Image (cartoon, rainbow, N blue to C red; front, top):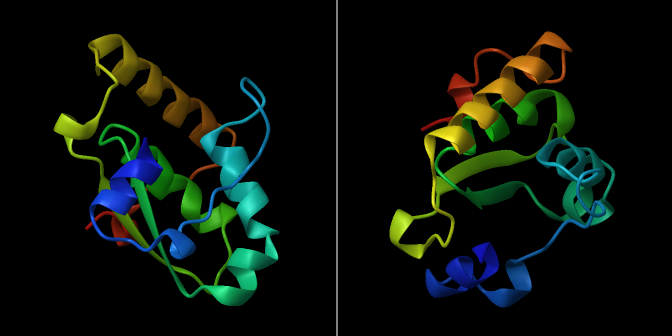
Amino acid sequence: MMVRLALEIGIPADKILLVNCGRRPIASTLTQFQVLKNDSRFTDDFRTIIVVSSFYHLPRIARIIPGNSPDNIHWHLHACPKKNSRVRITQKIIDREIARILKDASEGLLVEEPIKYLH
């Protein structure tokens, strides 16, 4: 879904790279960034990366970036417009996302203040 949206807003297909970090429940946003940190396609070739995700997911992503991504990358985070999302965001989903942020922060996997990445 996010690839389709990126193409729709004009990002060239050859500039879209996907990170394969396995299947759920092992795969997560955190493992995607950990894999990305060691992927030479990102560490050698890119200076700016645009992340497109659900609006409720961006705060978690912004907290993951500082300790789990290449230092030479400038990040832009953008929310997928709700009209393009097939996911019905419920209070249960948001509560689960907040719980994950708090759990990962308590384990030192996320930073508390992601201000730099949330524009």
